[in-house]
Image (cartoon, rainbow, N blue to C red; front, side):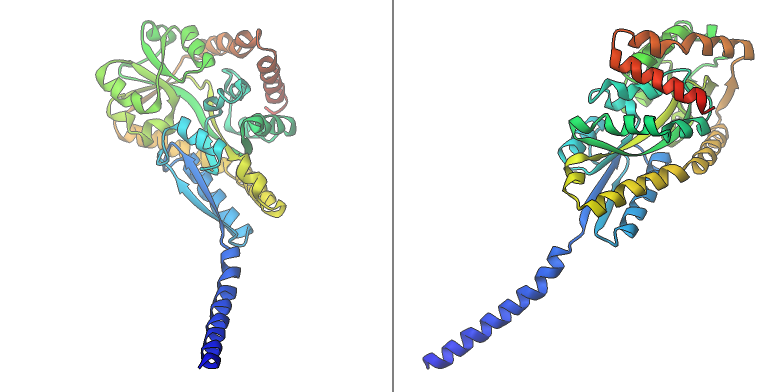
Length: 338
């Protein structure tokens, strides 16, 4: 009896051991989850992340599984950034101005007068010294850059038409909480009001603001055309987005997977330009199709405006040596990459 029981127990043990052996390799090979967050949807940022996710999954051989959370599904932009710093989110994409709390030099790339075309933006973003600077700024605070995308030139959407600079006098224009943007609107003759993206549409509807400074792709994807029927193309500043990964997560990856993530970011950054330009042109058509009217400043006023705003970056950073150095580096790169 004891012998039979012992044999049964041994058999059960072998079965359990075999099952565990069968399960363990699969468990060990469970893919790393890479959650990617952004505030927008169906736009350049969303497209960049979709391409990035597909490349990382493919080139990692399935060892990394990407999950994309657009439209602020993982919280407000500050919460998304914090999550990425702590590692609960693996990557975030958005305008670098939102990272000034991490390092004020992130604002350098949005200096008014810096860029005049999407092609120039992409040349500067991929200029080795600029790329090294921008990708490394967040590392002491847990963020490492892996990619970049231009969004397009800024314009001002308003409830009443703006045909010349004088028309902005007394108008309350929404901006980011950015010293550069606040000063930009002041020099244009308007009254800047810092406001989050989510508050813009209600602000326009309720009359808290008369207009907003951002880019055409936001007006259409957020359906601002329901309230603001007029856009004047000021073209300053250019709106861009950076992709940063959780340094904590990246450092925990094997070296070959870290390389996959960085190489994938470089590939998408290098190829996204044509899509960006086509998408932007299409959004202008969408805006007009929904009753919007797009105007240009007269040539002489436009040139005068560019001259007036192009010193903002340098003027506002003179007492901040690190930021001033970054601004000067951006303008130097832009000058050689026209």
